[in-house]
Image (tube, rainbow, N blue to C red; front, side):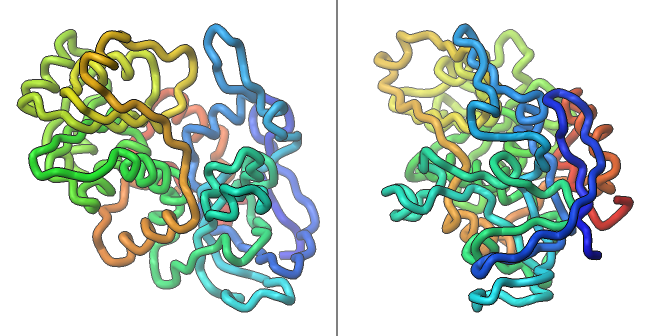
Length: 357
């Protein structure tokens, strides 16, 4: 194939359109990946509509963040290397890889310390440069691809965002004690990966929280010990009862005022609360609990290349149960986006761009 086929966002908020263009040249340190798996992430919904909700402060547009149209979205990418630049020596043509999409500026202190996700001038694949909803993608440096030869690309692709994000958040929650409970708020793609990764990291007691019983069933299947439907009026009391008031850690994969209020109400004294979800809007919670319970509250954004390598190694070594994946041809992207928006997806939709372009 001498052309790249993609489904691009041509106008904010409008359906994706099929486009073709010549395959780009491959720079000296870059690799050209023929994409076989591209996960549909909830953040793609934000990108498609063109903004993130700042609540009373209005909107943060993706134009303000440096995105330009037309744009190929998609940042959970796996595939096979089809070409390499002349200076590439650590990977080879034909090798199956997953792509690290959270590329920093390369010049700041965060990048120098391999903390790409803390870079304030990130150049994200699928936002600032064309991403994975295409037949091919150019990755600017060989260090941003990770070997997955012999493994399932569709299972692995979601780790590039979903798995990495929750792994970073769980690390920020701090050390694990045997008698501690972890609550995972939200049982979507992030939440289900969080259950599996938390178990692999040593959390012995996990309770999943969501408003959808089907997704809660999936969380239990992934390894959660207990479940709470957040629609219940006594959801906070249920969390306290299930955990016997030992809810020391909360990972919020949704990130709303409602989940914030639930977290600080149910969490025990000296507990830790980390937010990785980006629902948007104003984020409020009862202030009195912060000092009274001596809570630690922080946010966490995606993660670093070294952390993604750790997650992939956990998967390769059989320590991670992969989340449910539904593989679809890329031509179904607009229908898939609608299903995700409607809350009809359990786990992840992963596109195979080589099928039905």
